[in-house]
Length: 116
Image (cartoon, rainbow, N blue to C red; front, side, top):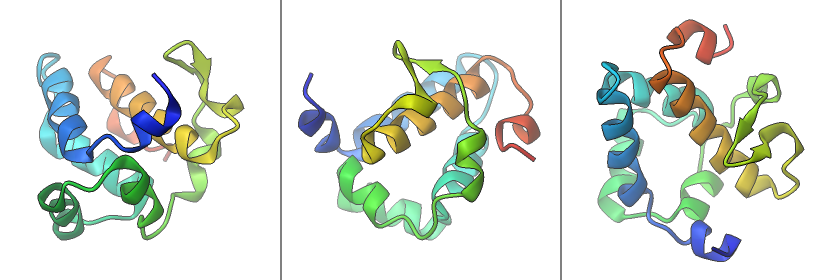
């Protein structure tokens, strides 16, 4: 799959998959939202707007109010790539979110996921 295809994927398509993934492991939608808010600076209202508008991933991350300055603390492998070594900035942001949701599904404490 080319990057441009991933970038044009609607966030509203991926969001329920994140929810489904974590709920299977006993975690909650509220925790997924907390991760998204922490990473992007969105709040519940602006997240819902992007879902309703079916924003693609590129738009979702470009319009993010403030990418958290602690994203540099996110380390590890997701989809076979080290997130800290991904050169494309947008792809790196997408993989950061994937990594955080993955950590939640694996049972990591939310405080640790949010690098507090």
